[in-house]
Length: 187
Image 1 (cartoon, rainbow, N blue to C red):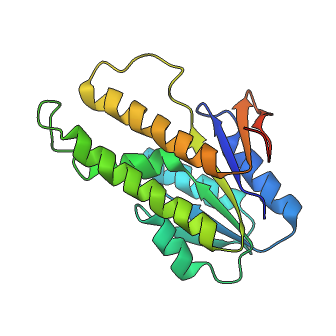
Image 2 (cartoon, one colour; image 1 turned 120 degrees about the vertical axis):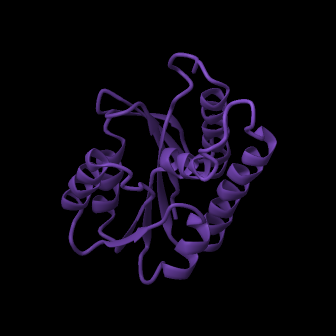
């Protein structure tokens, strides 16, 4: 089984490419959606994403503990799309949204994010399926002005690195074009 990480900026074509890869496989797909409909615009985006997916694909909506949920609900799926790590990490942060920059416990949240990604990596290792994981690359933009923003950027970067180590192939999406930056067997 081939495991893939797709990273890139917002609206770079990551989700479309992930779905294209899954369709090409011809195998049963489980789509793992990590978005929470926090406002009307996000609800509309989620509905748009749902309409774009083939009806025969299974859907699992999770906000945290993605690895555990996938293991319990994989069913007959042979391809799993996780879309996306960016929101999965954001969901962990939102659990502590009332904290100000001065109150935020960076090491505690880092532990939560590392645990979440570790659980997902364990899931990938234990299930006989191909995984296609989508995440944003946020480290190439402006430096966030708040401590919480910088922590989020840093921890998403760490999550992406942990996943990139585990998968066979990594693609960087640029203007809708996939650029392979890691191939199976390459370091």
